[in-house]
Length: 239
Image (cartoon, rainbow, N blue to C red; front, side):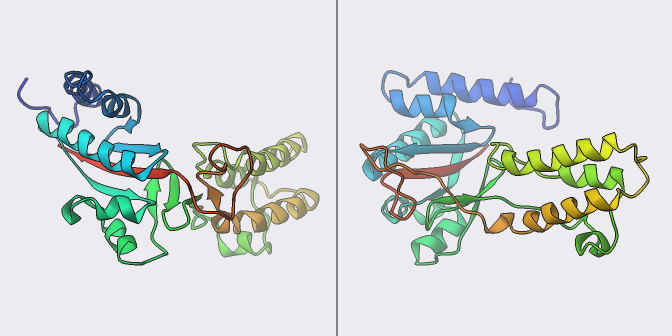
């Protein structure tokens, strides 16, 4: 096979198989880089963290070389370390990384369903409230049972960071279901009051910041207010 048909059902599997097969050729020469390619690539994105900036720089170079030998180009690199970004050519960097390297502090990258903020090395969540009508949002009109479920299920939380918050809404929805309200009918006032409290909290989720690295090196002490001691990097694989 000389080319891969875009859109074929088997295309994702074949692409991953070829990526891994190419990497395994260099397992003896670049063992750590090969493990990153095998275990820390998610479709066409590479996400990895190391204990030092020097190791991150070397890994990026090794990963780039291995992919190039298979005809793949990996670029769009980003990192929480300006030292790592300074060691890479500008053409290999994501646009946000270039801006971060030049001193910007409000840049974000999408990372597996999360928003990553390299400047302070934290994650945040993106909450879509566009489907919520103003009347339901401000509490003047109770949602229907169906609309309530639609809003709850619209929260995309791949990593489970928001589980305690989402569970509150699911418990509330169980109470609505037990009340016997039909799917197309508005929920009762007692449940609506609890729902509005939850909905107001939902609007504040985007201000939440979750540290990517939350332990000091060599200790078990949380360090939410101190700089990260590890280097994290993100790259995007192009065919």
